[in-house]
Length: 77
Image (cartoon, rainbow, N blue to C red):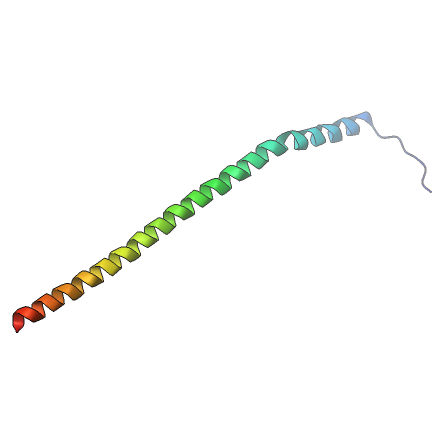
């Protein structure tokens, strides 16, 4: 078994300060992570909305092109 050693009070104060700092900043770090996740989710939702709008525009354009082609075919007859 090892013999107990004395630890400098400066070391104890430094470790205590670090522990208090970590415990004190934990709620702020958690809120920052929450804000980052919320911002990321909002950005992904906006990106999905833009993608859906682009796909709808392509479908509408294809339908319009097909309808115009059918009308032009009627005129040629």
